[in-house]
Image (tube, rainbow, N blue to C red; front, side, top):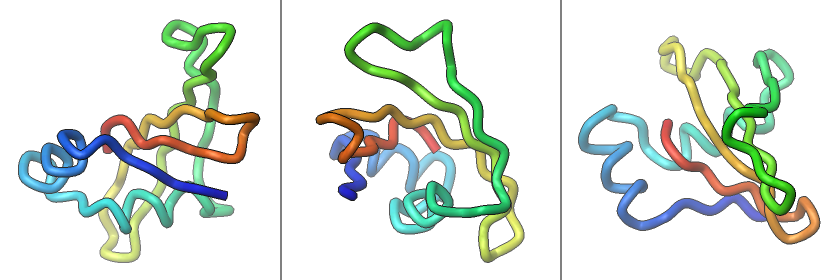
Length: 79
């Protein structure tokens, strides 16, 4: 599985929210996260999800990501 992020969002998440890409990406695989589909922002070609989890540094993270390329790619939007 491939986890990606737009270069602008990568910098934005790091500078504004203090969330490095690797910290957000690791949470996607967490078994102790709350995950639900974001129906309002999903389309037929791109499903969006909202995930809430606690990071290893004990921060509560809210991550929005979408699935692409037959579900083999997960793209982090904001974290």
